[in-house]
Length: 213
Image (cartoon, rainbow, N blue to C red; front, side, top):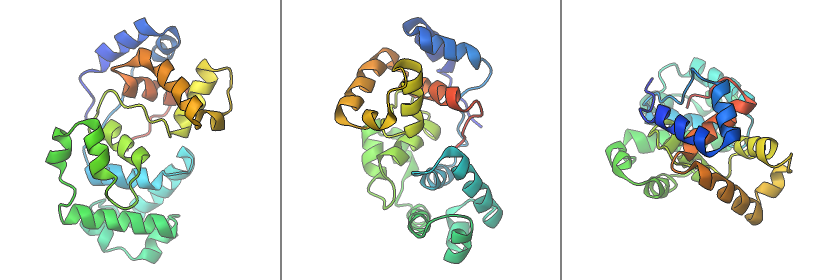
């Protein structure tokens, strides 16, 4: 597991810029974002987590690891679709993960290129793969490439945490609208260039156990 070397600097800067964030940071002093460094597993787990709760995604992922202990593209391609569906994956997500495995197996997803690219370029490259949308690409930026300044505006957990901590319980669905996104982007300006770190602490305010993609 790799932790970002910028974490202590980011914590100090966020605590100074935002008292609410400072309070959250003090609640979780000994844990931090960590990367497993496995691009395929990060993307596959992000696909599993699309549009379902963290708890449900964890349960599906645990079953998937039992069915495919070696979480590699080749191992995934050797699994039957029925086996993957039996883990709790929808038909569509089975198609997405198998397609992702094919892309990785054939080196269509070039990791050195992604590491050298800017955030928006990474998103453009990844979203060219079927089943990978902007949210999944942003999870890859945060959890695999450890990029420090990603704000995933489509993440319902982040929106819920911002609603509770900053907006007096504003309904999450309102925050998905254009004006809601503009409010969040404005609020998050104080967290730049550490919006990934702020997002991570807001996630912790809902669930103290870190998600590891």
